[in-house]
Amino acid sequence: MTRDEYIQEVSASLKRLTRREREAVRQELDGHMEDHMEALRALGYDEALAEERTIAALGDPEEVGRELNR
Image 1 (cartoon, rainbow, N blue to C red):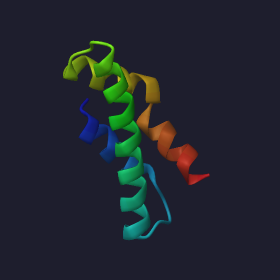
Image 2: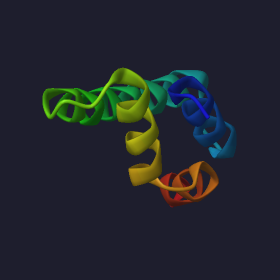
Image 3: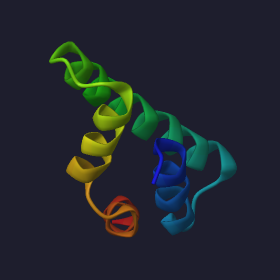
Image 4: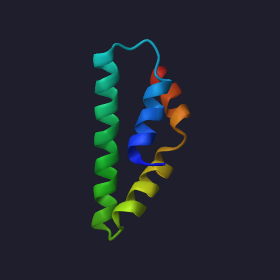
């Protein structure tokens, strides 16, 4: 799964949001993912492994979406 696919899955799980709110959540999540990936790259991880580890650290995208709905 790629970063974009992960964000799309989380976004698909979000309920009762306007387009603007949904986009704000997507941007926030993308920013957090970029920060985490940047930290991993600084430790010597290549781009692909940094993305993989970031996604793994965040957990199941549907669960993240459910938590954000709360």
